[in-house]
Image 1 (cartoon, rainbow, N blue to C red):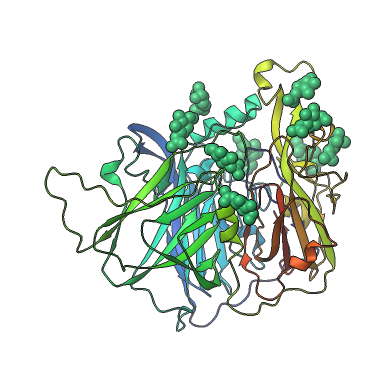
Image 2 (tube, helix red, strand yellow):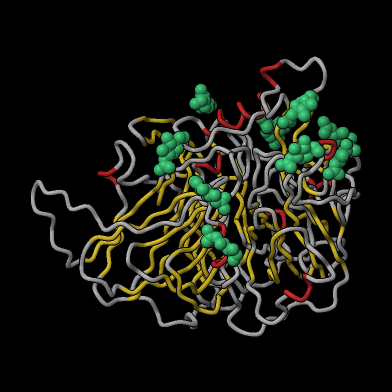
Length: 538
Ligand SMILES: *[C@@H]1O[C@H](CO)[C@@H](O)[C@H](O)[C@H]1NC(C)=O
Ligand SMILES: *[C@@H]1O[C@H](CO)[C@@H](O)[C@H](O)[C@H]1NC(C)=O
Ligand SMILES: *[C@@H]1O[C@H](CO)[C@@H](O)[C@H](O)[C@H]1NC(C)=O
Ligand SMILES: *[C@@H]1O[C@H](CO)[C@@H](O)[C@H](O)[C@H]1NC(C)=O
Ligand SMILES: *[C@@H]1O[C@H](CO)[C@@H](O)[C@H](O)[C@H]1NC(C)=O
Ligand SMILES: *[C@@H]1O[C@H](CO)[C@@H](O)[C@H](O)[C@H]1NC(C)=O
Ligand SMILES: *[C@@H]1O[C@H](CO)[C@@H](O)[C@H](O)[C@H]1NC(C)=O
Ligand SMILES: *[C@@H]1O[C@H](CO)[C@@H](O)[C@H](O)[C@H]1NC(C)=O
Ligand SMILES: *[C@@H]1O[C@H](CO)[C@@H](O)[C@H](O)[C@H]1NC(C)=O
């Protein structure tokens, strides 16, 4: 695995290399459709927080277009790069069975599309229904280059819940009052953590609580009595978010394009990359209610964006505000920023709708640590390039490897064509040094090694992977996304995973299926999947 990269690339992730060759594309189902889209990546003037930026967008839209398909359909998206940066597009959560080269992460499955270039992504959605999204997968372009990807039930079938009256995607984002590429380049240059965002957004709008924003606050209309589906997507780069709607219960019915056993809650938590589908019933007195999201910030002492983004749930029969009077929408209460209990209560409530085919016999039993690291600056480094804590450079790692992207071939191409020297296959199956991962970690362990290492899996292998958070420098909740796969989250817990006692917590009956796990702060998450999708998946 090419494990996690630097702190500036938080979809830290691991890389699995299938051993089989790729198959020819499957023949689409008879009534399945093929949808063609053109995405022109271009600079567009976007004004937020009183300031206009030359923002990189798709087709001049911020956020970009939300695509809608049925399960079984094929998408063909021709991406034309008219921006001044390299770009690729990742279809977050799409399984990409036998189409690994359409997945998108730069230098993993493809070389980036250069300015002036183009690339056509073609893939079929197989057996997935619900809410996903797409985003740029090159540097920090995804701060503004993203949109929803909604997968409706297969033609002729319906939801496993009563058909909602309306459906509304709500994409939560992070906005920098700067060029996001400058923000990440500054962090790379100085070695410090990147600047936190200046606003969160809902469908691109910060909402009433920010300067110069309230006239554009997103309105979500409802009629008394109806039940609507809200598709919540955390399209932010770095920040876990709590999401709630004042006075309304949320009935959770899906996450990451897999259905869930419905349950009711007042607040949900989404890590970056995660989606959650909720039903809401308009059963309150006709009025205007705030929809709100703000940080779940689990790292102690680390700076974070503590602002709150809002949209408005507006009953059609709500009394019109009298001229000149300010009728502020009804506000929800949000959990405290560091309310790990609320986050845990939510993530441990998720269940598959019925008994799930969780692999029971395991061929590969893996333990990967995930966390921060601090790299000592080589002697002679200028102080301005060494601005991490105590004169170091910030990084992140898995099993003590800080992933370095190749710069001349993609991993998939190097694998397919047998090009040596691009990656090595010695990513460790377990931490090279065992220590008290969540304790007071000795500083002699803080410095990872850099490498482009992958872990090889045999086609068909049944894999258990325990993701173990570390408290190196500081502990925090880490979003871990696996490309090209959904996996069952069979358990999570705090402290160090104990294989003798914690297996008792495993839910092998109806665990939730997701594509992105939130590894608890100072804790662990155990996932299982079958390696049935050849390619390089990070
Ligand atoms: C852009 O992509 C090309 C390969 O497609 C690569 O050679 C070049 O280094 C990339 N540029 C940057 C700034 O990453
Ligand atoms: C990051 O934040 C610092 C402090 O507020 C500011 O001086 C700097 O310009 C910011 N960097 C970018 C790239 O916006
Ligand atoms: C957010 O943080 C700033 C300091 O960075 C502080 O002044 C402010 O009170 C905080 N706001 C909230 C709502 O916590
Ligand atoms: C959460 O933050 C509050 C102050 O903002 C602090 O008093 C409390 O101890 C923190 N709780 C945890 C679990 O860190
Ligand atoms: C969080 O949960 C733990 C364990 O259930 C409990 O001891 C603690 O009091 C809770 N903290 C808060 C702030 O609710
Ligand atoms: C800072 O660096 C010094 C010298 O390398 C070391 O002795 C000290 O423990 C470090 N402190 C922290 C908080 O990292
Ligand atoms: C480019 O690829 C070759 C393999 O052909 C490898 O040996 C070399 O180290 C790579 N160069 C860089 C700069 O990554
Ligand atoms: C962690 O360990 C270091 C070195 O052993 C010690 O100096 C420090 O006080 C310890 N910190 C805590 C919070 O226990
Ligand atoms: C990571 O590897 C470096 C270099 O071998 C070593 O100094 C460090 O202690 C290791 N840390 C861990 C957590 O394994």
